[in-house]
Amino acid sequence: MSSFFVACGQQSQSSVTQQTASHLTPTDKNMEVATFGAGCFWCVEAVFQRLNGVEKVVSGYCGGTVADPTYKQICTGNTGHAEVCQITYDPKKITYDELLEVFWQTHNPTTLNRQGNDVGTQYRSAIFYHNDTQKALAEKYKKELDASGAFNQPIVTEITALPTFYAAEDYHQNYYNENSNQGYCQFVIVPKIEKLKKVFANKLKK
Image (cartoon, rainbow, N blue to C red; front, side, top):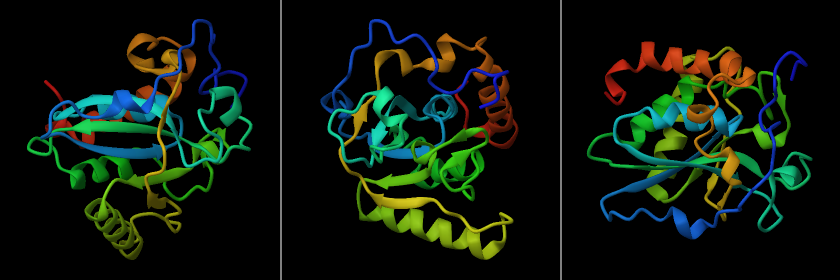
C-alpha cells in the first residue's frame, strides 16, 4: 500500500475480542449464508451491507491451516487464510446469483493474490461455497464470464468448499460504517460504493 494511505488492517488493535463461528448461524431458518473473499474484508463488508435482503455481514478468515488465527498471523501470508466476509441473506429478497453478480463486479477477479495495492494470499479472490448449488452457480458464472471476455485476463477466483470460518477481531467489524473518514476508506472503499450505487441501484437498501 502506498504510504499515503492506511493499508487494510493498520489500525489500533486494543480491546480485541475474537468472535467464534457459533455466532454466525442464521437465527431465521429462511436465511441463507454466502462466503466471499475479494481483497480487504473492509471493502467486501461495506459493499454487501448495502444490499437489500442482506441481514448481516461478518468479516473473518477462511482457507488456512492455523486454528483461531489472529489478524497479525494472517498478515504474514503464512497461514493460508483469505480475508473473507460471511453474508447472511434472505433469498426471497436477493438470490445467490445476484450476490455473485455483485461479487464479480466490485473487485478484480483476474489479479492473483492482490487487489490494488493490497498484496498477499490473504487478499485473494475466493468463493467458499456452502452447498452443491452454490458451487454449481459459482463455477457456471465464472466459466461464462471467462468465455464472454468480460475481463481482459482469465479469472483466477478460487472456488472451494467452505472450511472453518473464523470471525475477525471486533475492531474489523462494521469497519467502514464506523471509520468512513479514514484514509483507506476514502480512497479505496468509497469508489467501490459509488460504483455499487451506479450499477446496482435497484438492489440497494432504501
